[in-house]
Image 1 (cartoon, rainbow, N blue to C red):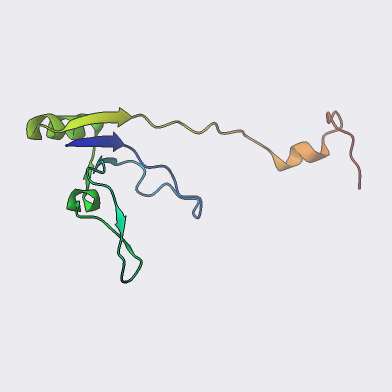
Image 2 (cartoon, rainbow, N blue to C red):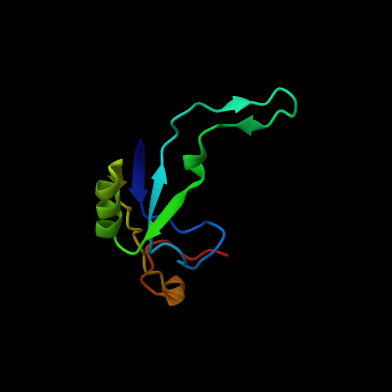
Length: 101
């Protein structure tokens, strides 16, 4: 049984950072998925894939995995580079690109 521990990224549909401060422990797929011949749905007998555990800190998630004997890997988040852009810079007299209409 193996799992990954990660911090989810901000969704592209919203500008807020809700639910990005928690760490998530998610189990890896242990059985292959198959297509149901009657309905065409993708099914799996592995119910652990449905479980997502959330923790306040990375240390808590690692401690839980060690205590339960779960083999895990940590995926560290990539911090976004914020570029400060000012609207008034469009009208500077020493603008690097010439102003055109």
